Length: 206
Image (cartoon, rainbow, N blue to C red; front, side, top):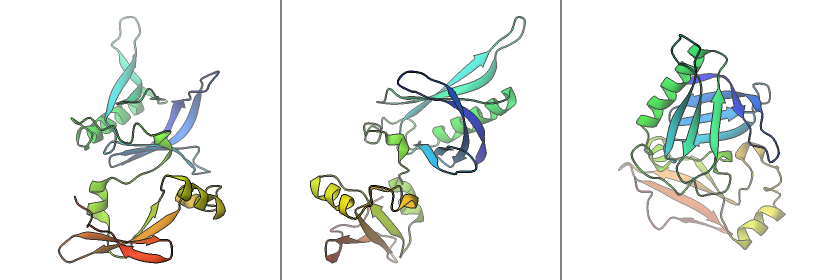
């Protein structure tokens, strides 16, 4: 794990500028926040759900070797590029080393993962990979669902879940499920649908 402040290059419609972001590398996730004080997540790159490539940026002076000042993360099947730079060469090198290590052991390394990258604004939502779910979920854990379609959209509208009533849950939630882990290690969901609570037809498979 690594935490610190990096500058991120914004991609505005009319101009681009560097803005300080609090960043955290936690396992196979790189998460960045608006500021340390606010703690509001601005984006997350999960290397277990995305196929990412790290591009290192250098500076060089006459008679001196090139030195790392920042890096860019390219996501397979997305035109968006995530550019960061550090306050010092040493700090930039440390970030590059640790991010590259996490990419190299991630599920996205050596595979072409596209499902998440093709979704609109995929970096704005913190998802959990199936591998992480299988490793960490236990009986009683609650899973929040965001479904697609008119009925789900209407439900979120009338329950106000799409306008920030539940800010700690990334909003846009329309129903929940409760995890059950059996002695065999299998995971099942008791999923709330309308007025009933019913189990999934199949267990969650690794």
